[in-house]
Image (cartoon, rainbow, N blue to C red; front, side, top):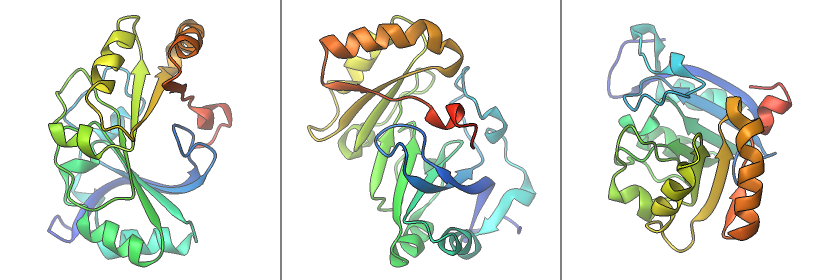
Length: 204
């Protein structure tokens, strides 16, 4: 751990696991979860990532060493909201080691760093910036209310042509919304279903 400076990032946790959601579901991935978020989703399942403490700041070189030591081929930078920080050095170090880098973001901040996969999950609590629609490889909409289907289509109409579209039930309401999502995808095949499979597997 160290003090905050241009060479450090606030890390809440980091671990080697299996990606449970979206396009990379089932793939081994090292997760680096950065602390700090001002979006404030009411259904966020990692609310402890919102706050930052001084002892969470770790040198980027050290963070990269943990990821590289795992022998993973894929690293996910998530949060919190990771785009609150300059990710350039961390991304470069990982890519130089032959590791593909994925990002999970609400799209509210400009990305600093050239990631390999941009997962855009917009939230109602803070408006995304236009850049997110242009850069995203994957649009993941969490369904928490019946009106979210219309909201999902609104965002889908703005993303680039290559972006993959996913609907994901909010975990605590999965029993209610998954049947609705299934029927929606059957009628709207541009969308696919994303499930939080890591929770079924009881892994981080």
